[in-house]
Length: 482
Image (cartoon, rainbow, N blue to C red; front, side):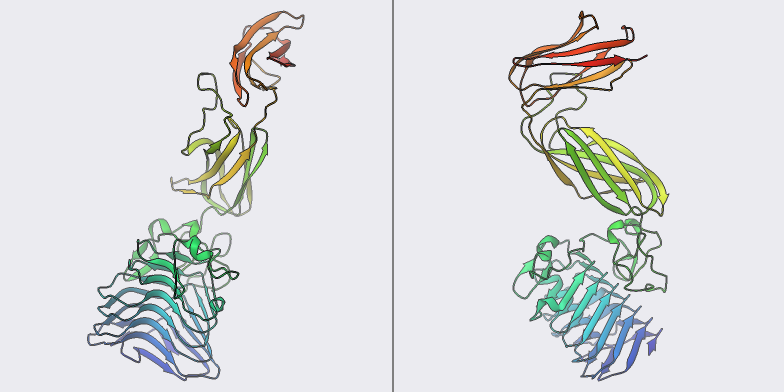
């Protein structure tokens, strides 16, 4: 066991810490390891080698931020070249302050041997170096069956040779990678590389290696740390960022020994279980469509300080059905190509049990529309959901509707026509006398018209609403109930 030490040295050919043919059960935990002394020509923080027939080695809760090399050889935070055994790497901070002028490789995790590995809940930050490495990656794997989950992988080295993951396995499926944050914000670096092709953005990496697709539940999001070189505890907007929720039960605590949260409030990806429980856990956005009526529904597994949801909509394309802009009484304007807020649904605040929500609206016309939600916390912080698209069909038949009915004293009349021409909408009393003409204009098919009927000056009772167009007539009863 190597526990709770502060180790400074030269990360030479055999590493600052070196294990060779070590079987049995081994634990390396709670150490701060720094290759901060000058003179290194090949810098390895922890180096595993040899051919242990069996045994399990766990590397957990360590901090390895500084390694230096000025020679022509490579640099790696952890280098595994074991032929056998099991290696568990969890809850470590690795990277941030590596210094190299080398033209050789620059890796945070370099996995060369045939050991079986589980790599979970690590924070791996590969920052820019002065050198021009042949290859650079947060994770490089050449051999061995390896699981890689719930890790935060930030690649800030904007070089064509630089990748979050370099999968150089003969059988790429030997690497199981999922529920990670893989972030490479530069213009030259990439999410993944297979020895031949680079894959960027994340969606291209997720489509690689069919049928064993990698990282199907992973994200690509910027992360704020206390210090991006020396302290990878989550801070700012990342403390409470729902995007960073990982998979349950891979580790019971974090780098500091703090208990991991569990679904629906956690756990966080990476080595740090941040102090803020993850806020609103959405379970999906769905839509039911009937004509031009849309009912959105969604639910949450839990909520923390949830103020509510703004409903946003934009037009993706249109079949031409519209509400004419010449009518000032129209409630819904013709949709544009940008997102617009169309409604708000109040949240439950703080809740540990599932909650269900819905929102109903009448679309201004047939076509394709996109919806998304903006979830807002009580402190003003907001997050956007993924958008979803719906499609409504054009109806070339006439229709006549009112809402509300019964009413007092105003109702809205909606109608469509089946043919181009002129239409008139009138109101009659019960003995057949016309008492109002609400609309008398040229009309077009595939257009929804909407007009108000204000009966403030009329007595309570039954009235007849009548639509006349070129080839059809429709009537319906209205009940004014004071």
